[in-house]
Length: 102
Image 1: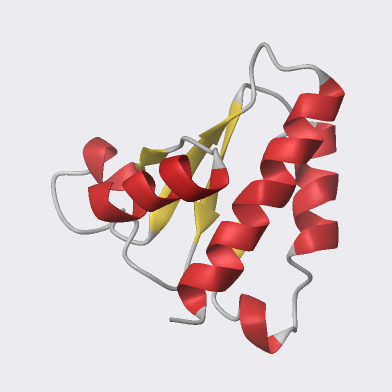
Image 2: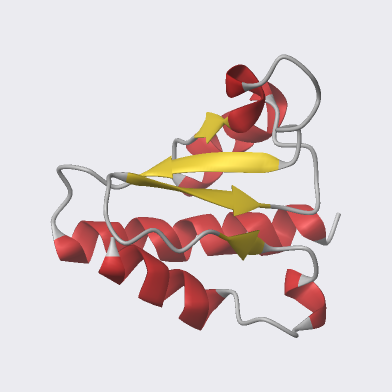
C-alpha cells in the first residue's frame, strides 16, 4: 500500500494541470485505495486501461446505487510484490494522464 501511494504521488503530483481532479484516499492499511479521476471510470475506460496499459481496476460505480462512483477507481494492491505494485501504479498514471487529456 505504501509503495502504491508513493508511486501515485510521484507520477500524479498534485497541482499539475494534467492531474487536475485526480485524488486518492490514504488508507493506513487494507488492500485497496480509491482514486478519483477527471473522466468517467466505466467499463469502456477499463477496457482501454487493460488492453493498452496492462492495468485492471474496478469501477467504483459497482459499489453505489447512484452515480456517486462514476469517476472513481478501486485499485487493489493485495498479493503484489513491491516492484509489481510500482510498475502497475506507473502504468495506471500514464493511463489517467492520457485519458484526462482526451
